[in-house]
Every structure is written in structure tokens, then in C-alpha cells.
Image (tube, rainbow over all chains, first blue to last red; front, side, top):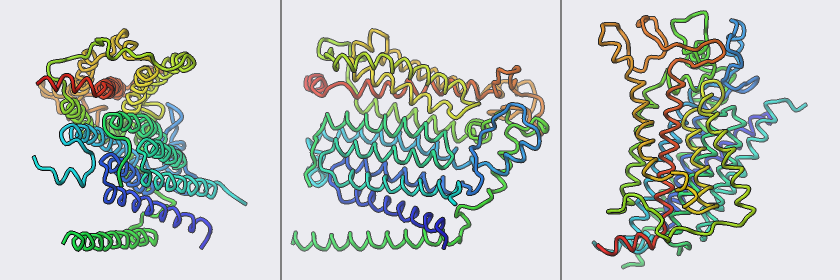
Length: 129
Length: 87
Length: 279
């Protein structure tokens, strides 16, 4: 086991720890805004897993060509050393959708506070219409 | 000696550890405004990790959304509702 | 009876939590040991090699996208439909948030003296004036050069809304209303941005009325539809087909959408109680 493999296993364990902390925050904390904070942490960890899929060790570069008139050798070198750009495109879409859902959820939470007078989930469940 | 992939992996491990510490502090905090500040710190640690993973488009989008928009929406929502949670 | 159900509930939760944790640990170890082939490898997959090789390939013009930046070519050209529906999801989310926090009968909150605050101290005000100007310049640069440098439409829109936010926080609301940053102006700008994206995507459809074979959101002439394409650029002024227009309209739509959300959220609560309490 080289030092590199140990570091990758440590990183995966840290991400599992982040998922566990955020799921605990969603399930066991009674305030609605704390649940929304933990949900955003969960979404970011999932995006990081997606980017790990497209990563390339060794001589890696950014997927952007620096010239406007590339020769054929430059294109082949670019193809052999650049990082996968497809997961980055999907993560951009995922960030926008997570942010839209969070903005809508906080609007609903504010409206719930106006109607019920409390943001505590355990008490709001007991109230009737 | 230390070559380039190893340096990147050491810095990645450091930034993920920092993100885990901030996330744990954010979930366990009873004062909601301090929890929002810790969540913004966790977003900055993740943005540094995305920079090390060679993804510059995501760094720009994520800093603007994670530190600017989430913090703003949550602080406005806290000012209209309660500040402390009752565990 | 109540204590018994609480304890049962607690052990129930602990069992579920432990189950989820064990399942996650087993999955991640399976991925690490290479069952699915996703651990950090030395090569990328053939689909990614295709996108990287043909994004700016002037020798084989049947398949290119005329963009030196591979991520932007995939957001608007090779995978354009994903971005189209993501923009519509964002549009609907802003409509939903604004309609939940509604103000019946008051279209735009003109400051009747309740919202004219004092702002923060003098040091913060002077620095904020500099920072707002810098943010506007940087955001427009990110939007227009989206097809040459990292950036694009959405990143620029999110950045320009931060400028209006710190103007609102350091000064008062009158600072924004004197410069006509109100909901009455921002909602039409948002609609203009989204309609612009739709029209640029439908330009091939109007051309198809004369009998040429095209497909929707077409950027450059392809092998199976070789008769229509946007001009890729003139010398050093590189437009990359229709991606320049897409980036600019997305910048308008996203920036105005976020500004509307900030303006609706920053109205203090006693104003709502005044308006809603009368009904």
C-alpha cells in the first residue's frame, strides 16, 4: 500500500463521514432551517463523488485549449492529458437545480412560520388545521 | 522525492478534513446564525477541493452559490423566524 | 404508553442509521477495490476522448463545435437539451418562491418611509462603492468570454446578483431604487433573457420551413445536416456559433432572477403583518 492509495482511502472515508453527519442532521434536528442546511451539505458531497469519477492521475490538465488554431499534435496531446469534462457539465446542472429547490424550500418554511407560529417540527405535527 | 500527484492528494485530504470539521460544527450548533457561518466555511473548503481537481467552471459557480446565495437566503429566513433552536 | 413508543422509536432509528452506514461503507469499499472501474485511473473513457478531440478540430469540420473550451461546448452544443430544461426549472423556482411570499395588492414596494434605513458605517460605504463597480466589470467579462475562458452564463448571473445584494446591505433600499433596480424592471428583464434563449434555439426551425434538413439547437453544419450553421467567428473575434448569444441571454435571465428573490426577501416582517392583517 503506497502512500497515495492510503490517501485516497482516507478521502473516501471522509466523504462517508460527511454523508453520515448530514443525514443525522436531517433526521434528528427539529428545526426546519437546520434541516435545509444539512440537505445542502448532502448535495455537495454527491457532486464531489461525480467529479471523482472523471479525475485522471499523473499528468493532468484543465480541459481548455489555450490557442485558437491548434495543430494535430496539440490536439492529440490535449486528448491524452486532459481531465474528463463530462462530469463537470452535469455537476453545473446539479448545482443550479439544488439551489432552486433550496430557495423554494425556504420560502415554504417562512410561510409555515406565519401560519403555525413555530418552526419546530415536533410541535407543528401536533397542531390541527 | 515528492512529485506532483502526491502534493495534490495531500492538499485534497487536508481540505476534505477541514470540510468535515466545519460540517460537524454546523449541524451541532444551536445558534442558527453561527451554523450558517460554519456552512459557508464548509463551502469554501469544498471550492478549494474543486480547484485542486482541475474544474475551474465549478469553482466560479460554487463560490457564488454557496457563500453568497445560501447564506443570504438563510439569514433573511432567520430574521423572519426564530434564532435559537430548542433541542 | 408514550415512553414505550419513544424508546421503540429510538431503537428503530438507530437500527436504520446503522444499516445505512454499513451499506454505504460496503459500497465505497467495492468502488475502491475496482469493481466498477471508477477509481482514479490513468486514462479517460472513449466518450470523453471524442468530446475533447472534436471540440476545436479545424481539420474535420463535420463534427466540430468551434469552442476551445470543452465544458462550455458540452453545456450548450453537445448536451444542449439538459441546459434548456435546467433553465426552465430555475425559471419556475423563481416564480414559485415569489408567489408563495406574495403581497396582495402591492406590486412594488415603494419606500413609504419604513424601508429607508441608515446603512452601515462610512468605511463600509466607501469600500462597497469600489467593490460594486469591480464586480460588475468582472461579471460582464465572465459572461461575454464564456466560450474562451472558464465561466459562462450562469456563473456571471450569480456574480452580478451579489453586487446588488451588497448594495442593499451596506446602503439602504433607496440606493437601489434610485438606480431603477426594482422588481418592476427586473421581471421583464428575466422574461427577455428566457425568451431570447428560446428564440436562438428555434432559429433552425424557421429555416426548416423552406425544406432544408436541420435539427433544433444546431450550432455548426454536421454530416447529416450540412446546409445550415451559425458563423463561428471573424478572425480574432471568436463567436463560436450561437454560444455567445446563449451565454449573454442566460446572464440576463439568471442575474435578474436572483435580484428579484433578494428584493422580495428583504422586506421586513412587520410590513407583511400590516398588509395581511387588514384582510
